[in-house]
Length: 274
Image 1 (cartoon, helix red, strand yellow):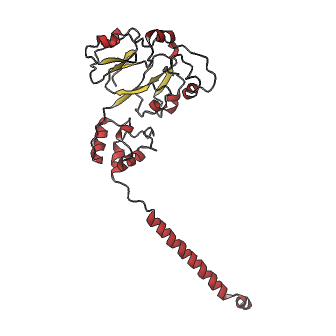
Image 2: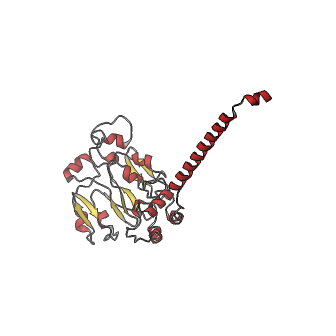
Image 3: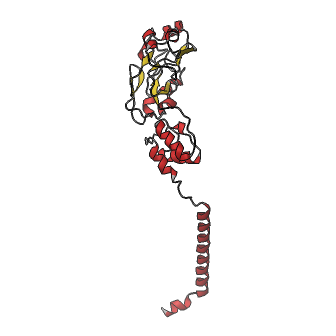
């Protein structure tokens, strides 16, 4: 044993240990410097307060990972309150006070499908393939004769985080009592016929076709024919025809239902009170 220790080159061992110590010390210094450079500042105390005021759906429709990430973005100024469709107007005002900004956005909204076609709208061809609306849209703008007709194949259903959309009679229907207003369906619809309207709206136009009456009749039995009776009969001057389709000025509409009664195609529909 004594001979073994005598044969060890202690100078080499000492040199090796010194090198290892120096390397370890160098790495320690580097790690310390990196930690200081990349040190994360304390979380903004407003984030938790804002998160508590948000809708809490964590739906991601705002483009962020969830409500906490959205709250952080609001504090950093990289997001706006208008991006969240689920938070109430009152809470948005409260959040704006926390942020020290003036919120001038509109009131709460609800979502509607601006189409009443479905099975009442003719098909240009029989589509065979993956049943998603986006996929159908890639082939000659979809199978429907109406270029703005609902394809009824469930792209909106697939993206809805709370199963608030049902498809029947070839048409998508929003389940108001379930819908959280995240807007995922609005963004996903390839026909751009899912819209936001004021939550207190009494009516909406269930058609997006801009063609003239004769053309509409040839393709859809329930499409707006652009007759203009709604505009003429509205006592509040709250409806105006634009590109052969009625547009409602909700700031003037009183919900008298005159337009609903005179519409020959019944495309102006009453809304249930939420």
